[in-house]
Image (cartoon, rainbow, N blue to C red; front, side, top):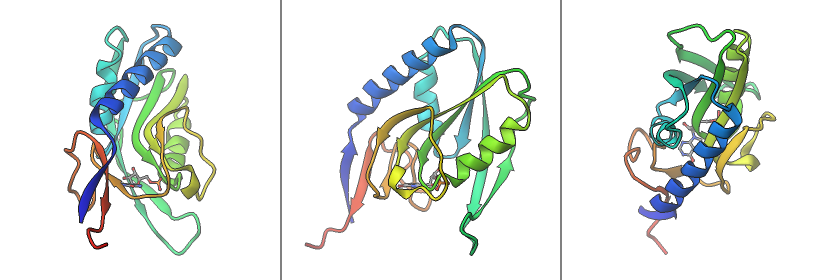
Length: 174
Ligand code: IMP
């Protein structure tokens, strides 16, 4: 297998800068809780928060695991929850990629039940053609085709998260 660069590091940096500025403008100085979705969202979160240097914020993490069941909706469990209450707070969920939409639909439902003041979702990547449930992120870094990508937080069996770019694994057979 060979790694083919799909989104180079400098293009990611430019887009993350734009997203950070747009998000900060929308929050208009109100304090926010930035929630990184483990594990894939950590690299994006780390860069995004530094693109919002004047924004009052705290950061936390949560983790969810999806079990591909026989039901059409699958099952998603929150395996690590937030440490503090979010009622009356502005919350932004920071995810690496939205694929079927199942993970974020479940996390969103669980967090909305806690009555945050607002809840936004920002994802670095979006594969809209793969949706199994309707889900529209508030902010998207890049929309991509239906391909399996790695790097910048995204993994294949735990590997490749540390690549500074987003790449696609391609077979080297011709
Ligand atoms: P969803 O619930 O199907 O939207 O899945 C979201 C999760 O699936 C992401 O947080 C990733 O962990 C994983 N995922 C989906 N597509 C990819 C990919 O192309 N590369 C690596 N992980 C992916």
